[in-house]
Amino acid sequence: MAEYPDRSQYPAHLPDGSCDIDLSSGKYLKLWQGPNHPGITGNMSVELTVCGDEVVEGRTHVGYLHRGFEKLMERRTFIQCFPIVCRICVPEPDFNEYCYAAAVEELAGVEVPEKANWIRTLILEMGRVNSYLMYLGGQAGAFGQGVIGQWTTYARDLMLDRFEELTGARIYHMFILPGGVRDDLPEGFDQRMEETLREIESTLADVHDTMFRNAVFKKRAMGLGRVDPAWVDEYGVTGPVARAAGVAKDVRSDQPYLVYRELDLEPVIAHESDAYARADVRRRDLLMSVDLIRQVLARMPRKGPVMATLPNVLHWKIPRGETYVRGECSRGEYGYYLVTDGSGYPRRVNVRGPSYTHAMALLEKLIVNVNISDVAGLLVSLHTYPPEIER
Image 1 (cartoon, rainbow, N blue to C red):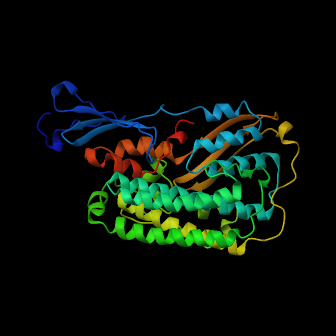
Image 2 (cartoon, rainbow, N blue to C red; image 1 turned 180 degrees about the vertical axis):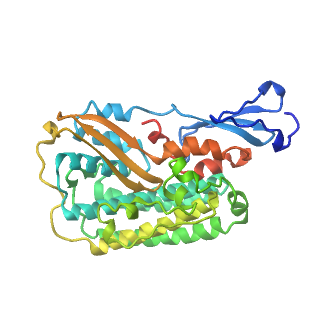
Image 3 (cartoon, helix red, strand yellow; image 1 turned 90 degrees about the vertical axis):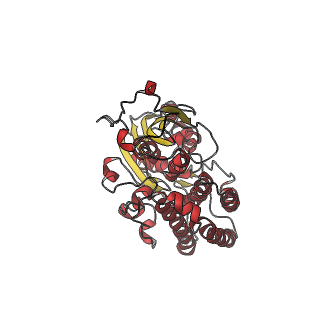
């Protein structure tokens, strides 16, 4: 490879985001990051143009994963769509269940029982905990701290035990349905959940001491991938990536849904806007989710129905209409745009997941001038799930 040049010698980026690079000059080399399934970034690939060990340009490539969820849903009845929506975000399927169910309920005029909304909130916060635990292990692993992933996987497995106890499944729960939820909390669930939460808190204390106070992690993560607050609206940045830039975007407080209006929560923010700040925002948000789970279990009504009366769901025809329902997943705003035409099938479904804007437009802007060794850490810091892109 040619001698590492001064940054001033890099070719200028054009208005459309492309870069006029002459590969025949010998100064630049093409490399590929991914696709490799294990980890937070999943089946996604980034085509890197490097000069020495520094990235000059990065292009996101998708298409390595199952696709077409939205079109599949247009050929299935409303109830048959639930095994599909879960797979749009494998580590965090419950937000798809909620957004889709809420959209169907709004168009069908279904009123959800109060207790079901409390249980839905519980499920969503449990899913948020799971997602953040997976992220922390991936972020640490991207910087060479493999032990953190072992600890967080253990803690996540404990929460999966609670999911299995409540829903009968560990990954795809299909527990939030139009009209409510499938069942009530099992006897003794509160006590077992409290034991799980205490173990998670203990694990997070170890993660904080070992990861966030680690000199190597600080050296590599601080200053990496700074997001200018002015880019938040321009690039559609939401969730922890926006909050780490000092922009308090959180649908739970901006537009409360379910029972979030009755809970004590305040968006967790930082101002450094780099990979370290994003990791710390997520760690603190995880602890807030632990507290929210305790609040839900302490305040939820213990009596009452958990499912509304519905027509025969196999022959359910929803009146013509359209709606957009959104919520706050662990990565930011998650939304479903649903159109119905009076038939027994959705006319159009469009899913808005944070991964599309974070892992493509924003990533390609942040990756310029990043060292090759920090590309993985930058990718994970944006916390993307590729199925949302290939939906």
